[in-house]
Amino acid sequence: MYLKIFNMIKNNQGFSLVEAVASIVLITIALLSFYSLFISSFNTANYNNDKLIAINLAEAELERIKLSPFETGNLPPVDYSVNYNQTIRKTKEIYSGGDTYDLEIIATQNNNEKNNKLINVIVTVEYNGKKSTVEGYVIYE
Image (cartoon, rainbow, N blue to C red; front, side):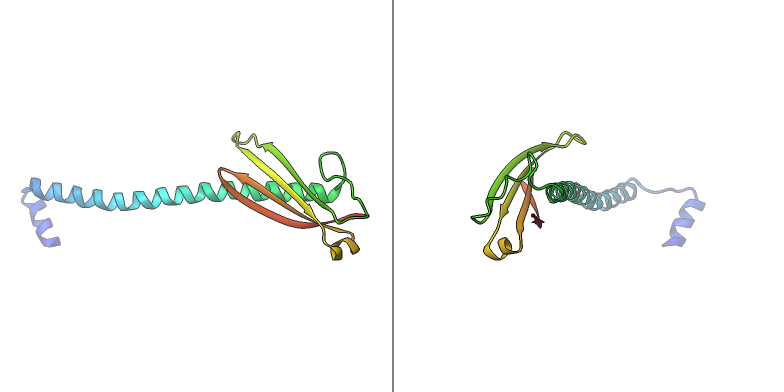
């Protein structure tokens, strides 16, 4: 094969139109197969980026609640006579792309957690129809 190509170049015969079109078709097929791979990789990277932002936002909100659980805007005060059970909904707008992330904070407590002065806090972030959840305990005195 290489000898044939070398002889064609040496004899200045060149390639026929059929050979040129066939090679262009083969190259196009190869490039189109990589195109779907690039699109899939791009979509996966965008999804992972959105999920990472949502998880970081949920973790930051949970840490904010842990630092000062009963300040304004975090959790309502504890009634020591009953188990704690609160649901709070917040909407936060992230300005890095103008995307809106909805936060839902659910704070619950069972008898064992109440005896240990713990509140189970679940922070759920909803974005683009998807959800990410982070869970942790808040200690109160």
